Length: 200
Image (cartoon, rainbow, N blue to C red; front, side, top):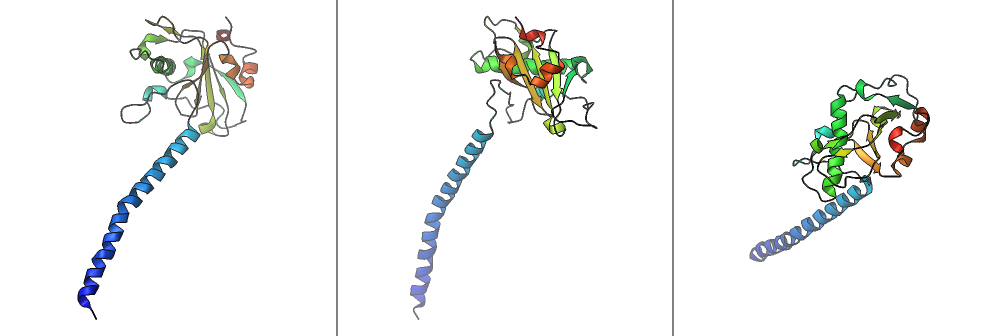
């Protein structure tokens, strides 16, 4: 039995495994990154509105103001529309601020990095409604209105249509001349026709 030969053979075998390990780790890392990118692309919201992300990767809390408990929560009819009042929300100012944040995000994404939500006003005359979901997480809240932006010569075109799903963030669904085509038909019927911000 060649003990010396056996001892020298083991390190050589282990060395081969050690040389392959970094390549295997790198390959696994690249596969994980590609899977993550693919999932992110497949599930990304392709709306026109941006969503503010804080430096820590968390959603800006201003985009998710507290909602009141839905009056229909005990007896649900998914798809049923409701006209709502901004003033019935726990904090109407916070709701309007959330909409202003989305517009400021949109303007910053277009290249004007200095605009803040404080420069954006959503005037009176906004329409607010909801479509019941199968549960609270699937309820859809809709807002339709116009904007005013201080210090911006060419703000995004009106009207603006916003949506919030469950307790998620408010986002801009669409803005401009054809924006109101995005409003669910059930809400249009509940409002007895196109809301005022959609006209002229």
